[in-house]
Length: 274
Image 1: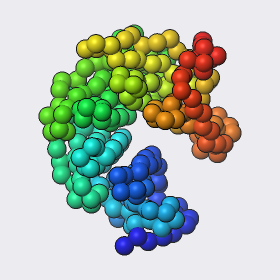
Image 2 (image 1 turned 45 degrees about the vertical axis):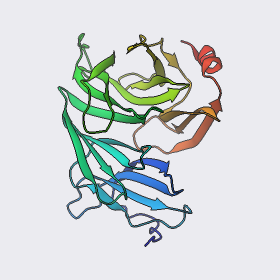
Image 3 (image 1 turned 180 degrees about the vertical axis):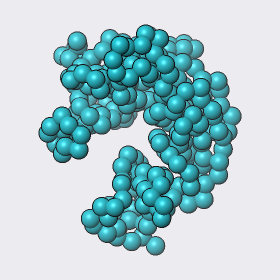
């Protein structure tokens, strides 16, 4: 039965990387990473609510380490979950959020990073995967790795295509990838931050074109800040949300969240073009 979660949450737990979705029955489904188990090991958990006040007891999704993950509910009502750890992706599915069936495993040639799931209107599943590889041009200082972005395709979540490379982002960057379908075409966005220099968050885009994708667009800086998310809704258009740190140092409080929406990104991109 639903129960009200205690507030504040125990400071001995680390709770982060939340995802929130609304399922076909109207429930709000919240997933997050936590080290709340007896051994304080990082795992993925899920809880749900119908009123945003009373929440079910958090349940562990998979009993294994999770670095990054994403979740969606497909057109058949299944919850599809992908988790990344080390150099492996694991795809699982559930009808009730409690009993999970492993569908597939994918081994990567590099260290797994952020993952994004999308189901197209025709039912196809898309998995955009970021992994770290050694940079072609190693910098003299800083991180010698680069973020390689690729995509997998599937019709059932069990069998996946070979990884198709989309782009490789410059080294020493932190990347937040976004994947969406806009009027029948796929659009990707990469919000990146160079951790070695005091520079604003920049975003680049790629669009689906025939059997492949266009080259990445020019970088656009200054639009948003940390923890930026971007989505497309047929009614609301593009919706972007982000928070801004009060001080540029680890652990500082943030202001926000801020939200911006509109039918097109063009006016924003023109205003902030680098």
